[in-house]
Amino acid sequence: MKGDFSRDTFDPHKHFRRVLQQQGRVQLDADANEQTAILLHYLQTLATDLIGPYAGPKGSAGFEVGEIKDGDFSIGKGRYYVDGILCENDADTTYQEQKDYPHPLDLKKDASYLVYLDVWEHHVTALEHDYIREKALGGPDTASRTKVVYQVKVETVTGTDTTSTCKTIRNDWLDKWVSLWQPANRGLLKIRVNPQEKMLDPCLVAPDAKYRGPENQLYRIEIHAGGKISESANRVSEPAFKWSRDNGTVVSKVLSFSGKELTVGKILGFEPGSWVELSNEEQELRGEPGCLAKLLRIDGNRFIIEPEINQLKPEEIKNNEIWPTKVRRWDQRHDSDLTGGVIPIKEGKGEADWIKIEHGIEVLFVPAAGEISHQYRSGDYWLIPARVATGYIEWPSEKSEEGVSTDGENASAREPFGIQHHYAPLAVLTNGKPENCRCQFQPIDSDCKNSRT
Image (cartoon, rainbow, N blue to C red; front, side, top):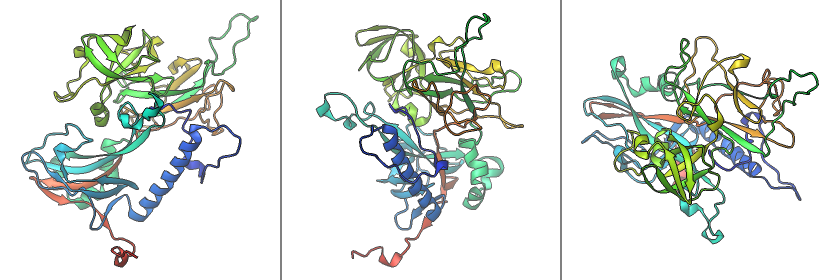
């Protein structure tokens, strides 16, 4: 989530029950956010333990899939739980008309499909939904929101899978199907704070291995282009990353555009020479990265970029989409190994494999063990709180869970913090006809479900 947060402190393995405020203390966003995360973790775990990985209430279960007609099928209203997350479909809709899934895959009547639900938590700010902003404040935003995004998707079933039924789908659900969409091995990252270049002059003392930035920051390392790394060339589909010292929160609304010019809502935080990402809401909902351009000049509230906008526009953008609608700043402009504005991912274990970020912070993408390959996925990210007062970064080591200034030798290799998707099978479509794969649960006391007392 690209919000203006100090840090994200929730860790389910600590088993904290609640956050307790103390009198006369400074109030921090992280404390309130952790309290919400603790409660959500409890509720989702409880719902999963009671309901199972996916099911809907009997009589009100949603997402019933209809027959394919004219390249579309119906999706019934109602409620459904996926890994304890409540998905509410407020009204009957269709596959092609889903409000949070723009331009889904076209359907063929004679093909076989697995229909499934893809669910995740989507961050929403006043930039996307202006009603969040309190107009009485005269402009500044306050808190942001998250929403549950659910998308009914299809996976083409071919070969021996054409005989799949709901029973076989459920039996192979995690090992065969979910691993297609959310691989278990999405990358491992180590972080360290390293001293500057070693001093050869015996009269000079090398600086300490501390964070040397002038301000507290929440660094964000985000995968831009996904893919795997080959053993031979170390690059197959060019997986690459970008980084921000402000958790990617320097963003502005695009009011109009033409050629190399963008007219934007605000210029605060942007500066010439940086790389900016052009995108829209539909791209984010499809899980696609935006396009990077070089910010050459700022003239009033106009950005001059290179290359031209029409040269950047992706083929996936449909004619009825406005693109771009937002511009976001990234901070990797001083990195020497930039390719189109992003840094190619290289994995390794040696000293030469560490990648410099800034102010002493370095990152290392760690190879997977054995014959397993990492599948880097666009949008996955890691967060690094850096603190001036201590010179530390908050990153666990193999010896301690507390954040320390470390040389990297004992730094823990961590999986991406998100985005975490959750999946549930809905139906198998064979020659356009659906077989219902949904599960339903009965209320604990069904005799009282209609009682008003």
